Image 1 (cartoon, helix red, strand yellow):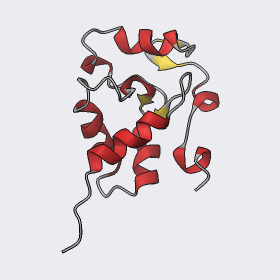
Image 2: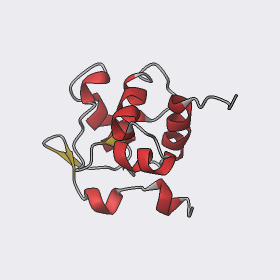
Image 3: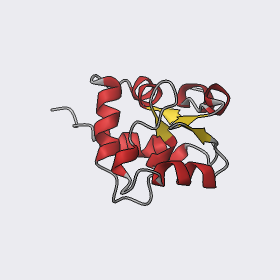
Image 4: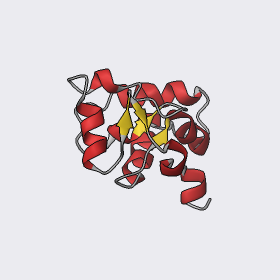
Length: 111
């Protein structure tokens, strides 16, 4: 019987690699990991890691740079503050210069 994958842990491993001052998306992580349920699976993983300080979940945004998971951070501005503390500018819940700051593991990890 093949070994079962721990999808959430795989997602967390990728998220840990996102550098400070950069962001990634649910979809780029899903594509990199070839997740069958795609971005939704990454979203579920991110929703489940709010008590894990070793996973910088604030660096994961939606496909257009919106802080779509901000309500999981214990306050409406905490995700934004965490990003801004790393030099990421946010306006109206959206990452400014999103395309410039986007970290795609398939490109950045050169695989």
